[in-house]
Image (cartoon, rainbow, N blue to C red):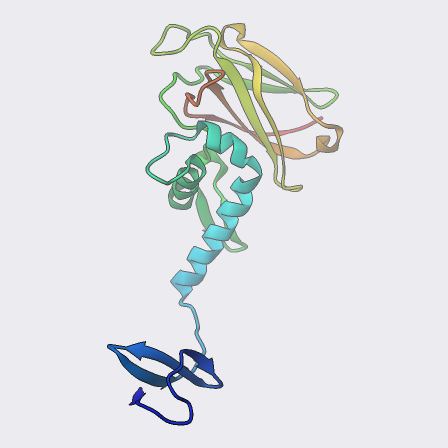
Length: 213
């Protein structure tokens, strides 16, 4: 870094060629641009980048669901931000083929509402899934009119099916017809309850993988 008072350049600010001019403590200052060196990320940094890419790619299509029902906002952190942090810490794992989601630990909602007891799932003809659960209304803040909701993911297609109001808690059973393109594919299924018109929800339950008929 060099200082100068007057000259053919005079005082200036900004970049001229490989020289940068600025003011520093009332003096005109010139310095050369820094040389860019080759940066090689560490193995740990590469792994973190791969984890982040995997988690964001998985969660982005269900941003709306997460922003409605994943915990509570903290300061300027959205529910999606909170969901991203959770999955980075708990629901992504390294395999010989790279980073993958740990579906058993994935959550599509997180909250204090009473969740699913005795959840079951069965496949049927015509891309149908039939769900069953116990009516645990009256336990905690659970009510008969809480909405049963599902999120279904097709790993081979990286596509989702969501329904945030399949039935009420008191119904104890519901059948859903999935899109034709899901036929013959294995899907991952999560279910939960929410209170319609609010952001209040239960922590979701993983119902496992099933193959759509």
